[in-house]
Length: 219
Image (cartoon, rainbow, N blue to C red; front, side, top):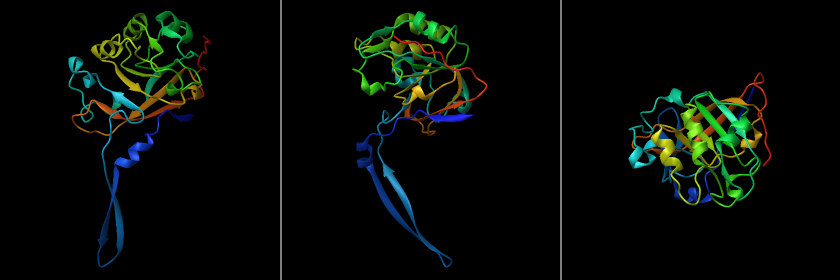
């Protein structure tokens, strides 16, 4: 068994928004200094999860502090691997199903469309999920989607359609090409902050040795 951290680091400018306060603590028995941090965060720093309420029109009331944690802890997750190149266009349902070798039946899905490339190594939104791919994902019953591609530059409503179907999305993952199993146990960790529907998160994929290897398709 191995655990792969798929999280993207915070950008360097995030450190500029962190302020350290040193708090002296002293008693008759001991003395030391507590290090307390005040900070401002953008909800799209690093990797982040979007709950359906990230779009006002699809808000289902889920927030960082009221979603059941078991929806994001060690969730069975199918892994689809492609090897799409920069500006290679839309990914279809047929392509996803062929790459996986059938239908997805797990509650979570991971799409590594770019192979060893990271999202910032291609032109932004030059590879995307088409309408048929979205119907295929939603029709499979997936409720949690981690992917290195989503929307096109034409803004075709990818997130609107996913959120309308109750699918939460995890954006800006890294190192997905390290995954070797067809099924993993996915954990998405984020603080239980009220109000927020978009939250920086950590993404962990647990691979078991008894699971078959992921299929790879070169495009």
